[in-house]
View 1: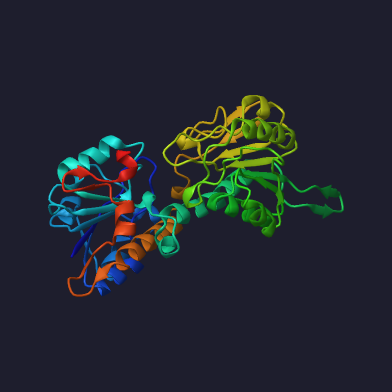
View 2: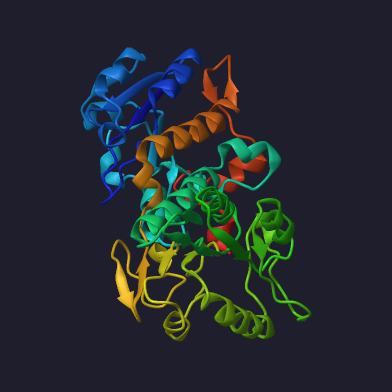
Length: 373
């Protein structure tokens, strides 16, 4: 069983799909690892540390040659896989809804594309869930970046010269990223409030010491989606939420937006008119900026100033914490493949529940129901 790992080539991608720790774990299962030279450089991992862990360090072409499995953070172009075995697995993030041409190319080339974004939200797959691990770090980084851009302190400070009041932080969207953003803002000393379309998150917000901001007594809420994700809200709820947010957002210093719906553009949470009500010097971090943005006027990797408010967001937030993000991503991949490892054949055999969920292509065809429906 030969596993290949290539250097990531997407713009701004600093992560890598494997770390020395997981090289050793795969080797203990009987696999051989071939890693492209410099693959871990942006994540502060040297070629020597990979070699010391037992990996072969070589060129991209030689790494892929004869590979049974290719691991990546972002799925490589098919052209980079020349020389891999027919039907080789590629486990990575594929952005299946946004990159349909790439999925079709994988099918045509005969590779088996395993989309880690499609990992089902079930208990036994939690340790394999790259969206959760990367979102956790993204929520943390969003608060730190906003705090750095904010021209004032976060915590209340009592000094001989007077008292500095605590910053007010508002988290919109309480999934994995939102919960970490709440916890991080609280640790920095801010007064934190949060909202979500899913009523079940109210207790989670309170458990972290933040104030829940929710629309009450409105019929037609459709916030409870499958797999823990939010779905579309009713029109009545959207109107009520907009009014509530408008009155609340005007008092905030920091706003972090995290709302995403799989397979769709990011929902618009903050309008230009709402931004205009905020205090000059306030900061909004749009974690969904790469998927269209929750905030009107947000631009990936730029700080946009509107009405005196700074609006920011990274196109790839986890890549700004490349070392830790790579470590978590790599462990997700190992947990995924090792869970199905057959000791006799020394190769993984996926079951139907998880295998069918993540598999995009097989035997020259697109086979995932989410893409065929």
